[in-house]
Image 1 (cartoon, one colour):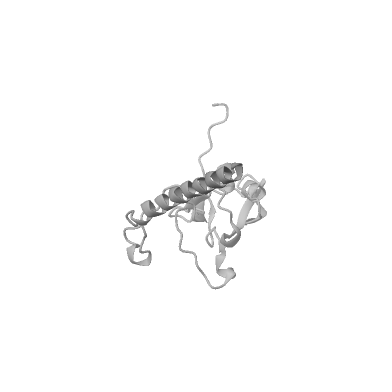
Image 2 (cartoon, helix red, strand yellow):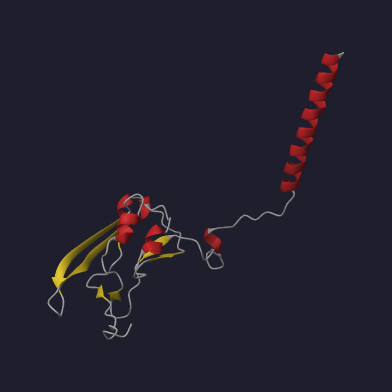
Length: 163
C-alpha cells in the first residue's frame, strides 16, 4: 500500500512539473517575436550606449592626442591586448620626455573589460559602440590607434605658486 502511494505521489509530482514546463513553453510560443532582421535594419538599429565594441584614441583637428605613453593601460590589460611603443625625446626645456611612437591594440583578444579606459589618467582612450568586426584574417584585427605623425596635445601650464 505504501509503495502504491509513493508511486502515485511521484507520478502526480512529475505530471505537475511537466504541465508547468509546457505552460511556460506555450506562453513563450505565442508571444510576439522580437527577432531583428539584422543587415536590413542597420539604419534603425539601436545599440546601447554602454556597449563596448572598439577601443579608439581620439585626435583633434591638428592630429594631436592626449596619450603621454605612461603605460598604465598596458599594465592593467589582463591579456596583453595593448602594446605601447615610446621613446625619449628632449622637450623645449631640454628635459627628456617619454613620447608615444605607436599604440598597438589587438581587437581579437580584447576582453572589453574597460580597465584600460578607467585607469587612463589623461582620458586618452575610449570605447565606441561599433560591432561589425568580422574579418577573414586575424591580422586585420591588429590596430594602431595613434595616427601617423600625431603628437601630444600641448596643454597650458598653470602658473607656479597658484595651487
